[in-house]
Image (cartoon, rainbow, N blue to C red; front, top):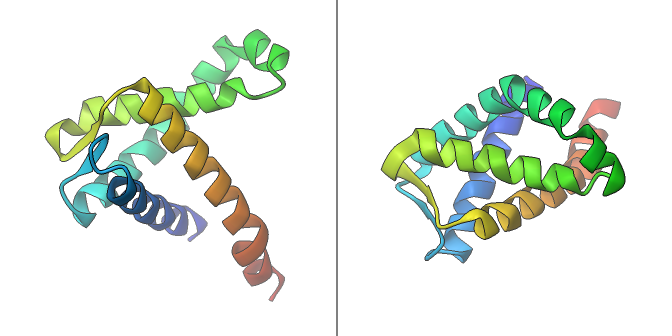
Length: 119
């Protein structure tokens, strides 16, 4: 259930980012956002652990901030696999989107999702 909520949250975040950065972050609609969110979750399950292991020394040296670069790389992979339905203008926009998504997800997880777990 938490996985489906995460997919929905990411889809809404994709729509918000595409609305705010309309020139650099393009989505065809909410179904494309859902598909991209689902694909991103699959990539995070399969590819992200490999990237984290390969870049562990750099991640330690940067005190974990390199994980934003890994998140941006997974967004770029999602962009490549989705085709024209999901477009990110460049790595800088992917990096900015990964930072925004990480911060919003952290806030939602610590506030809303934590209070629903206590019940």
